[in-house]
Length: 371
Image 1 (cartoon, rainbow, N blue to C red):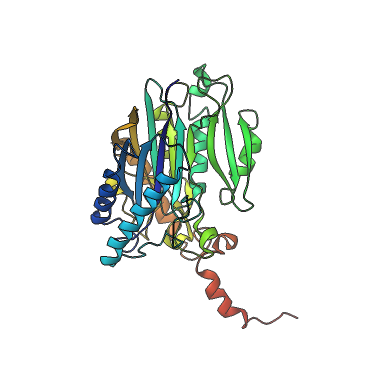
Image 2: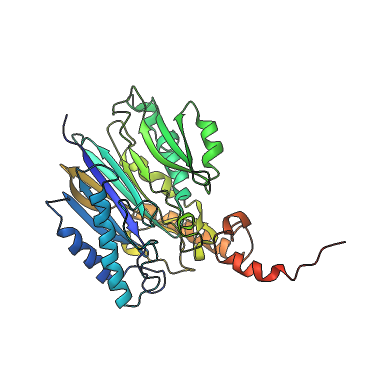
């Protein structure tokens, strides 16, 4: 038994350039300098990038998940980047840092977090997914397809080490509760939950007993932080991230990526108030311009070697996804033609924490009772 590796992916929007489009290079350089100070000390390795206007910190270490020192490093890095953002007068500088002082863990403080701790296998591929202009429920459909749909993942049928299926940890993010469900046994019941993606969100996926991997080690983790629940009002969309391990008893890399060949509808886009297609793009094309979108997802692939991040490979920088991008643009055209009408605009219950209620309150006193 070797010492376990922890992979931590922590993101925050600390300033957009211009508006909500992307991250200024000075913020990325600032983050790199801060993390470089800890390489070989607190960190084994790191990679800094962005998806849209979100600054993304990918770090490897041996401190376990929810480590105060790692989360403090991320928080302090975001604070340093925020100072640069304010100096450049970037839009929404520091908007995801929702409290004034770090209190031991960035969860519930604004940034999004996905972490996995496991013993490295002989070969350990891992994919870091990052989304912009959407919410955690955007991962429900692809994660379901990766780990539970044999029409997506043929390994569930022909790989003896995967036919036992997987266990899903699902959070009710409105009631702050969770449930564990086994697939394929409880597949239909699970779909009844995760199809309501604004409330029920897949948080983690585990191997089941009898498989090739330890059942206590999660093989996928999705950030589920809801900014409106922290701030009490709209401060930007949650822009989730996810870590997914692959191969050798798990879905292959190609099976992990395959769900994104379909640009399914997600909530977010302009002002966090619209449904639109999630477009798989290369990192350099994760620049949200059309109506501040459409929502984007990038996928960076790494091999882990004693905690070293061998990569990244920009996995959606591939013409195989051109058709998905074209379809996403067609869907964007169609949805945009609805303007302020549903189903392009989100339903009323999902608009509660946008800026719309402030407009509606001004109209309340003008309503008259019907006879």
